[in-house]
Length: 47
Image 1 (tube, rainbow, N blue to C red):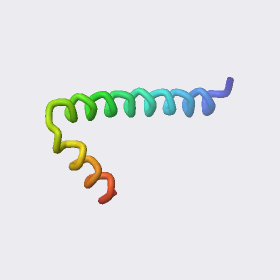
Image 2 (tube, rainbow, N blue to C red; image 1 turned 90 degrees about the vertical axis):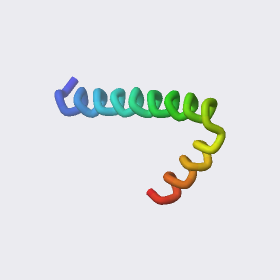
Image 3 (spheres, rainbow, N blue to C red; image 1 turned 180 degrees about the horizontal axis):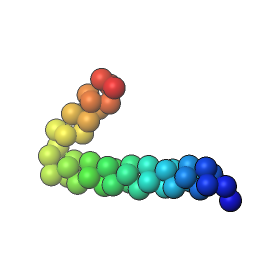
Image 4 (cartoon, rainbow, N blue to C red; image 1 turned 120 degrees about the vertical axis):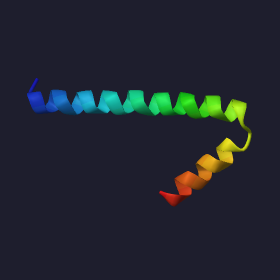
């Protein structure tokens, strides 16, 4: 395996872990605050 391929694979794994963490955090926030899902949709729309 080339170092470049290995690095890109590692980046993908990091991004996946990061998105999984963000998803879990947003799910937790949503269960605590009903309005936060609307807030997230708003933030997503601004991006």
